[in-house]
Amino acid sequence: MSSNSREAILAAAKLTAQAHGYSGLNFRDLAAEVGIKAASIYHHFPSKADLGAAVARRYWEDSAAYLEALLAESKDPAACLRQYPGTFRKALESGNRMCLCSFMAAEYDDLPEPVKKEIRTFTDINVAWLSKVLVAVTALSLEESEPRARAIFAAITGAQLMARSRADVSLYDALIESYRAAGLLPA
Amino acid sequence: MSSNSREAILAAAKLTAQAHGYSGLNFRDLAAEVGIKAASIYHHFPSKADLGAAVARRYWEDSAAYLEALLAESKDPAACLRQYPGTFRKALESGNRMCLCSFMAAEYDDLPEPVKKEIRTFTDINVAWLSKVLVAVTALSLEESEPRARAIFAAITGAQLMARSRADVSLYDALIESYRAAGLLPA
DNA sequence: CCTATCCTACCTATCAGTTGGTAGGGTGAT
DNA sequence: ATCACCCTACCAACTGATAGGTAGGATAGG
Image (tube, rainbow over all chains, first blue to last red; front, top):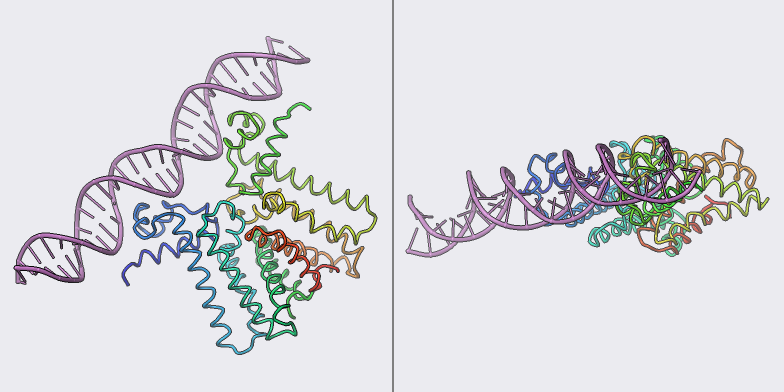
């Protein structure tokens, strides 16, 4: 309950970073969105690198919680897997944004090390979840499922990237459908 | 032969943009690399937006020429298609860079309109080429081949993005192999 | 109860560095 | 003499970051 601003900063920074990347984050605009002054952000985050790492960390934490909840509620792994591309679709729907992880993967060379680490974790979480679900849904073994999980994750982020460059969510849907038709994703 | 600097600027800007994006381009560093002063760049390009558009245009022009040459020389479309992922691999080999188009697709919101246009053209060129080759190689009809071509292109850029975030070219190879194993790419 | 001390959460003011861009001048080849 | 090409010298805007201060709440000692 202590610091409401900290949460507001994280939320605003997440949205900005999804649209403009780490380099697009700046303290003045961020502070203005939250309703405080730029210098006050330093009270909550010692540096931009720390803020970026905190945003990325929160991002994969939320993602991990969502995916686990999905699996826990439904008891139908196939249905979960069918829903998975929808999580990336939401970002596109929300102002043509994209996955934080994908944007920062592009910016990788210019990222502070702590941010890089959180970005990698997001990928790991997603690949691990996909791999686990694939074992339950398909005939793939555990060794076969992980490369496939990576391929699915990469293909989905690529689809998001392409759809974004056309600002066209239906293109994303078409790409996912093509992945299913081609056999990359289970039909 | 007239302006050697113009070519040098384009070449240096391409490499920088592949590693740091459009926002990572700046006139001072660029000029230093070429061996002239920042203000002198304005003699060749009226603005950063113009430079960006010129770089992106040259990028798809080179790509188009390369792909057409590939097809003209070999007479074996299947071999061409097998070589296609290699063109994106080269960027990773060259200092963990990535496709200009992919990076700028991420930055899409912040791109000047002329740059956006060239970026879209790069995608169109690649999809058209892939679609053409797919018709020759697979049993797909012209209508079926275009969605498939788009899916392949998106998946390959996604693989590049993921491999970049691990600075691991072998991960790219593994992803391409998974695409083949899954049936997205012809084996 | 009171008051000294500390903490949280923010502020103003300012910094040095970097950005894209401009004005105007020099020089050498045609 | 013109013009392509490059220069020095700026500028305004913006960047992350720091210094130092203020208002108000919590807390502990007397």
